[in-house]
Image (cartoon, rainbow, N blue to C red; front, side, top):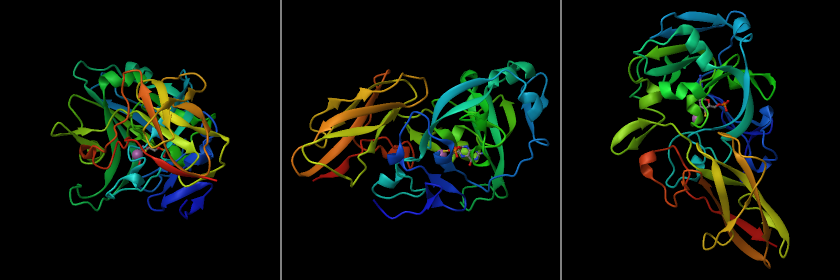
Length: 349
Ligand SMILES: Nc1nc2c(c(=O)[nH]1)N[C@H]1C(S)=C(S)[C@@H](COP(=O)(O)O)O[C@H]1N2
Ligand SMILES: [Mo]
């Protein structure tokens, strides 16, 4: 494994903005402990006083309103395990190299999120018949260097179509404690099944609109080419990752070695297969625990290792819609949605 700088057990990918990766080989349970959960920011983390903070709901609604944290926390809550994966996860493995945070396997995690259904607030506001999209805006903003970006401060904001609204949770607790500042204190959106750029942290405004949102992080960034047109990134693609053995690890010869990892999709994982011969033959791995919508599924495979030498391991996931992972990189995806098969090399001694 390469030398890497660790902070609180996470790999420092950049300091400003702060980007921390969770070493994926540490995977040891369904829930990622909050201290180990990856952190993705674009701007300095906003300092928010919970007592002064307000969430505004406005736009194409009958009764726009503001709500305090105190009031919000008295509404009916739900808790859901949801996997967040950064759309740039695995970027380090792209050849040729591309711009962007060089995430390896660990820009992904699974947490229990507690909060209020977006629907409750939308019902209170009363959607107008013109409502088409819902924009989430964070309290963070900054100036961008890119020539294509607008001048002045850009706010981190993203939209979802109205049909997706019923799935969204406005979360103020993560793994049973108050949402930490790095993960969006006091409130973030959780958009299950979508890449995590949609799960806006430090949420301050929810704007209902009658047209499609064309903000910077919706159209110029976090977008990909789909049939010749730029489309915003949305659903997570099917993927299995191997936690252990890690790439470059040495395992004992003539032994039983546990190969394990996690798999996720925006549908439901139906099967994970493992190859220990570089993709020539595949065996089914065992899916662990129960299937939970929008949360990853842990899996394991018992590998009877041969005599000393080396092996190339690959995992691949299948989902309920019959989707699996591509063998080759589709470059229309730019620097995002990286789920082609990823071989790892293991030494056997
Ligand atoms: N307000 C705001 N929300 C945001 C971001 C951000 O920079 N600002 N980053 C997004 C991206 S790209 C990801 S991958 C996730 C990361 O969530 P985490 O830091 O809790 O892991 O937050 C998303 N929500
Ligand atoms: Mo991300």
